[in-house]
Image (cartoon, rainbow, N blue to C red):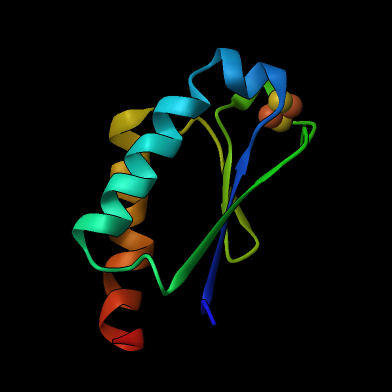
Length: 87
Ligand code: FES
């Protein structure tokens, strides 16, 4: 059972701001780091933070403005440590 929950806002504003690219980067990161079994990725409806999108929530903490560079940095910060914990 995945230990970590990662939620990508799939609302229309986050879509227009590039959430599909963000989702691709997340899935690639998890694959590259062998975390696919440890992290549950799911989508959600609009989180009412449209102007700040794309928005991603990791373990209940919302990260706004997840442009490609920002999401990779956030994944490294949040999951890089967790990867060692859950393996
Ligand atoms: S569409 Fe993502 S917060 Fe509204």
